[in-house]
Length: 166
Length: 277
Image (cartoon, rainbow over all chains, first blue to last red; front, side, top):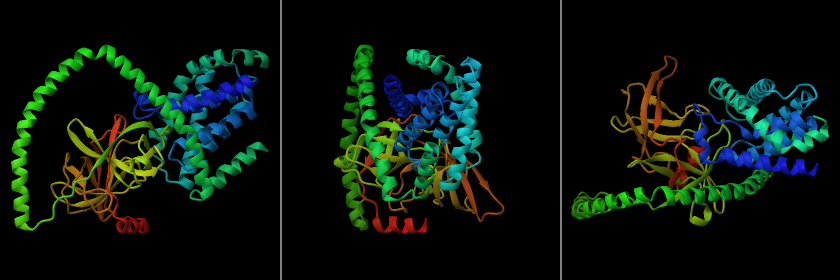
């Protein structure tokens, strides 16, 4: 299990640094970049259950808030909520096929975006146009990348998944 | 149980955003992330330089020849400019005008940008140890044009956080270069690469492509610095003012290097602006 913790922590840090680096801007489409950290959190919830998902989501969210100019908690809350919810409908319910992963990430990103928008509206500042300019494009982009990343993560966590019985 | 604790933590933290505890937690998080970001940036820069050493040798030789030619040309221009400057100083003295203030600047490399699509900030490799202070203006070069990139909002030992002019939180006093009508610029929307000028007098004639410069009224930016060009303007019946959308000269997605101008903000003006906000 210690292997899972170490690799999850490494994946969180690597994905955060990658998506914050200027070279990552080449991946922007219509000003949007994918949320690698979020895809990692959804993977953890999907593969290792709701508790692991929410803890990974919370730690990843805190790091994301710290690296971003957002108020502390604004990016953390949606991440651990999604990590927790996805844990319920994880591998024990759905098979990790390409289509399942695409739909899962699209829906999870949409819900994450809506929670963020509501929190921005209450605690920061928000515009409803963000649904079109941020939430939908990001959800689509995350969903597009997710099957490839899930495949890579499956290879990294191969032994752990076998132990879990998948 | 854990879920409830996490949930309460986030809600309380969001409710007391400016409290010392929240800020120090965020500071600790940033202090943890920054070394990784700097390390990754260093590795990436070294690899890029190593690769450039192999691939760009021919280009560099070519550029060196061109630069030498240019240098010869500019040496001649500099002599001519020296004469013009002396004449300008003499005429200014005659007119009893104040000398235009020149500021020093610090070159800074961007080590990271905001990792989220909702917010826009830039982290650079210069901090308080290099003389950077909060509210110092930041510029960048696009080709040979020098334009406003943003302002410093947070300073740590060796890094600073810059808020770009497309951020919805920024408030920047601007004016139209031709008509001299003033307005207040801020980011257009989350994730947008445009900025919007509000509070423009309705009688101002705004044309597509009009150049926008800083007005110098906010106490942070010097007057007359290039900001962007108008791409659209609109008048609302319900508002006594008109608005304009501006495409900044400095593109947030392409910016890699900036210059922090060592200009201390006008404290009284900044405090006054803070109270108004």
